[in-house]
Length: 114
Image (tube, rainbow, N blue to C red; front, side, top):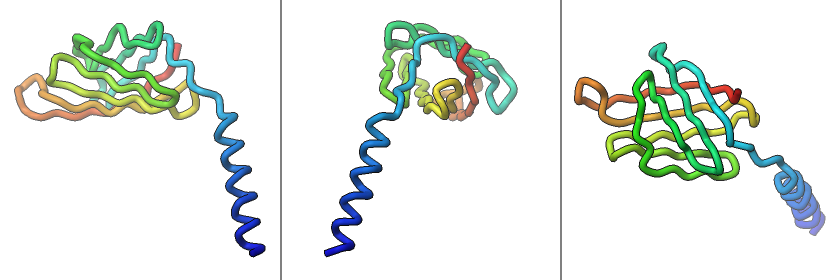
């Protein structure tokens, strides 16, 4: 019985801490360098991705989803990327799709909000 009460109390504390976590303000310009050394930039305005430069290549943003701690982006069907917030000012990005040579490619970046 004591274990059950203690577990419920601990769960309540964790739930309250999570409920008060600050959501990320994604609007702005996020930029950095990919693991291959090329520029990566994502511009978000009004909760939508308006510009995406992936590993030095401009991408046509077809769809994007901006949630509390994550952003997903797709272009014309060849690339997809996911940004995940680290602390509200930096984010990691993982992208994969059809590379410049026509084969599968993947890259990652750490982006900083400006």
